Length: 226
Length: 226
DNA sequence: GACATTTTTTAGTCTTGGCTAAAAATAGAC
DNA sequence: GTCTATTTTTAGCCAAGACTAAAAAATGTC
Ligand SMILES: [Mn+2]
Ligand SMILES: [Mn+2]
Ligand SMILES: [Mn+2]
Ligand SMILES: [Mn+2]
Image (tube, rainbow over all chains, first blue to last red; front, top):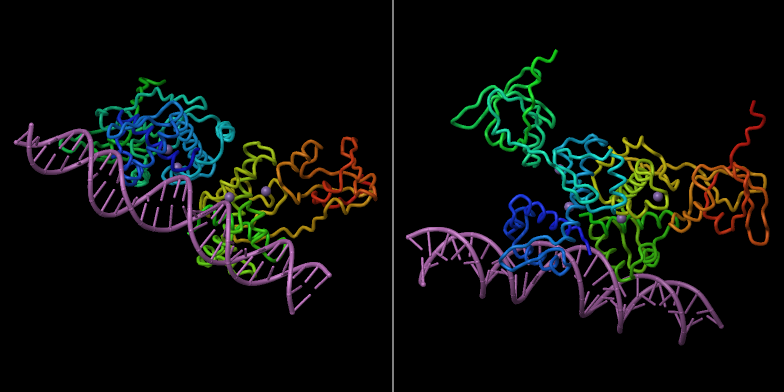
């Protein structure tokens, strides 16, 4: 039977599996801010439920059922985030914690109604793709860290690697939000920083760290638009 | 510290206190579908937290703090119910269980934003008043059970005594919803049933039980409206 | 006022999901 | 391959909040 804790573990396993292929207990300890013994415990519980396959010392991976639950929870999380930002006017740095609770409420029907109410959004407020009701993990985009942009590129922010509060608030202070298009004016070799130009003409330099956490697309430069 | 279970108990105590004045353990056992020992346990916890005053064998009542938490939880419950009905198009008989979970999510700020998004509703989908952010328990209405209506009255449904699924679905099948105005055609003495007339002209007889659970206002008969 | 019934409390158990500390297994360095 | 450091598991404990069963208190009846 599903509980809040079990859903959180499944979601964490899904994410780690997707970003690093293999899921160690250590990775779960970090992702969930818990202790090794707690992870071992829960993995046994999840294995007994048939949601993961667990080989002691070898790692864990989701079964079909486990993946379905994880995707459903992630879908709910991201839909509620959209709700909080689009309908209740929260900032993108304020919604994660509430979504972490809301994702455990409601069934498929409620989720689908919420999805329809929000006009079937494809991405959440952090640019992350929202799984469909059928568990389709879409995306299809090929985003680039801004650190790889070249001088002269016009780049549009489409996502963030790290959606922690601190980083998002850093972007807020820089006046950077999803969808914003910036121009790369200059790139410093020695520290990886780049000088960017905002649509309103202001310029600022961003650190390598910051750039690596911004996921962008290059914008076609519409040649002589007349 | 607040937990789901503690908030549910405080809410139950608030309701019982309001409808019967005195709160026995037995009443809580029934309201919460639990066991006497569980109630005694939780009352100790709540008393230790300073949310209730509990005299063994004598009953329990909310402190100022306890009442504030209970009202806040009830406010959240009813606002989420409005959301589910008004925005996600659920029926009034489908929303209680989800609200029972949603009421434990979010803080004052989220609740106030939700309230604003819903245009500050005064009543929930069952006609129950929604406490304000300041804990004002408004109402002010003086609703009458439909069993007390007289032949010739035009009555408008404003609330229900019992908002259990079964009763609400019974009203659904009769085509009765909040705000509907009915006319009392006939009253049978021996079983307390009454024959009512719908705006579309159809007539049906409702049992005493049903009538007692419908809270109504008499509608002014706008004499010759010209 | 004694006795039976009902209500409440106490005592003790269980499950979930945390934790620490120690043991065992694995992986990395040489 | 051995030794060391890291990771994982095991063992045992804890808190919250359920439960059952039995004891104690309160209530109602005659
Ligand atoms: Mn969560
Ligand atoms: Mn997100
Ligand atoms: Mn609840
Ligand atoms: Mn309600």
